[in-house]
Image 1: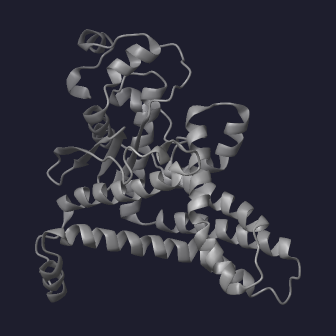
Image 2 (image 1 turned 180 degrees about the horizontal axis):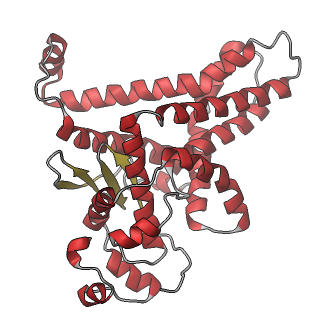
Length: 331
């Protein structure tokens, strides 16, 4: 097959526990390899917290809501995948009973919301506030505000990379990273114009420019630039401004990652390079069984055969698959 220029497909995803979530517009699917070896696929819709709002058309503003939506959908998908691996012998505690009694049928949603808020607060504390406090210890010795700002930014990036490296050593996370690689491989396969088969997917790269890892690294870099130019003298205000600017940072980073996913010019390749390098830590080569799960998630929400015909101009049917050594049962 002749090499084709990679095209934007609009699909994106996320690795979950023993599975993949794939999203196409408002529809998403979560495919999970259950303990018995079968693949379970749940298909649903997620319209976003401000669905239909004109704010979604405003650059730098839409990224804030897209970020929140990704957190909500990510938590929902992760909970679905985890439900197949819950400890059935775990007993309900008094706290669980009290929580369920107070919130009743909304208990799960409330709990998910609290977990998400706690995780977000923890991330802000570790990656945004902590670097400032550590750097402030050197104020007595370093008189240059510019150097202090650069030092804080470098420390923030090092903490983030160190965190990614540390969790990559965990066994369960390594498997999630393998599914992360399968997710990227499937999207790359479709976007380069190849049929979505296990054989073709395994040949593709496990790195992708629209990856969440790259987005978070852009967040780190953008924060360095903003905090360098936006300064206040009061220590309390310094902390507050770092928190207040997070939506702005997310909005800018979203536009960068959006551009990276749709363009292939030299400038985009340069600014995307650090994120692609970091993905060497957050993605691993999947096995074929993981790719099968990823393909199941894609096919539940995306007609890749129609996409190949409309975008690349060739048709893939069962006879084509058989002629090329692949049957429908393989995908």
